[in-house]
Length: 172
Image (cartoon, rainbow, N blue to C red; front, side):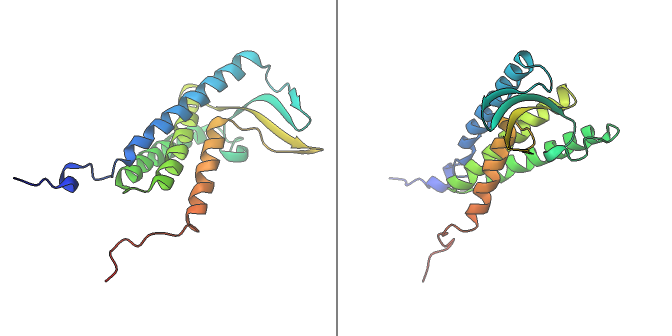
């Protein structure tokens, strides 16, 4: 009777590529909510929801916190190139993971958010933002589902630095 070697048959990523479904969910949810915001909200007119939260449709030609938003237009292509390269690197990273679900989920969240905003930049030339939190006179910059997924994934990566890791090799 011949024994098969499961490691030779299994995908080298330990099937962490299965977490790409989460990226697709984030992209779908992001694009759907941006469509709802764009078709139901008037630009820059807040719609109060809670005493600290509005729906406010805004268009961001820059990056996080409108970084580079006031430039002449070159930033669109810069951010498209950057997001494309980062997305490819994230897929490659997920592919190389071995049974690290936490990291796979964090990378899938970041990837989904990056692709959601990348789609906006390619098709519209700006990113649609509509979630607007504030407290008294302090207003947090408006953001979207993609930005939320990127932030959650980034926090998970930071927390990963503090998680107890299993040794990569067998102890003697």
